[in-house]
Length: 309
Ligand SMILES: Nc1ncnc2c1ncn2[C@@H]1O[C@H](COP(=O)(O)OP(=O)(O)OP(=O)(O)O)[C@@H](O)[C@H]1O
Image: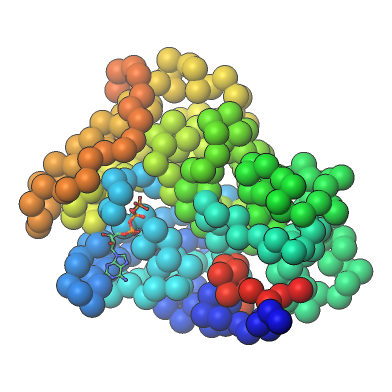
């Protein structure tokens, strides 16, 4: 017999460490620091704002604290200094692993959060149908996750999040496990959804190209000192075309981000000796180009949903 669902920490508690952001701001970190009990300082004096209807990408070396920052934004981990505030409502959390329930159909998975929130069946059906249509999944309602490709599973994860109409998406390398073409396609679809639904997003990625293609602004985290060492404005209007990635102007901006990332490995504010891990980011072609300056219920995680039918 499967264990019954009991709300776990990811859904049970509201975000006591997250204050209410002023109008026009979806998410704001002010002087945030994070030092774990073992003494490791992962983030230091980090300030970053994501406006309503803004998509900000975060790049940084492995271990630079990107996921920790998302966890702080979600209220899952309180910062040890500074403050974090967000707009009203719960953010949607999207991970590389779509965390679907294998015994449920696509429609059953997409409707899960609405079901747990007690939304009546008829209303839920409408929400599910809308979310399936938005993510190109109409016609797949009765499929099980095992019958879907990785890209389609990720669409299911996005569709499930959309049923809650979140004002803020927190995305942790959501497309990192997908092939390049699927990854590009889903990234472009995410932007289309963002433009249509109006949500804001904080998007963690290891790909400079993906960050520049999707975001309005890219933040670069220091490899060693946990600081935000650069914010690069991305000067391309939405909607962006698929071929933008091949433009010389795109290459110039991507190169600016890549160089900031490279510099982040030698951040002179570092308190520790050389970071042991090597950069695992693609660099981009072209000369420097863009501006470059430092600068309800819990969130929708379902790690604890085994047993939901
Ligand atoms: N609970 C914890 N206690 C101590 N250290 C932790 C804890 N959680 C994370 N860390 C450390 O914090 C650092 C940052 O981790 P985090 O996962 O935020 O990095 P990241 O930038 O997302 O890395 P990656 O790109 O590899 O996913 C790592 O060195 C990690 O070992």
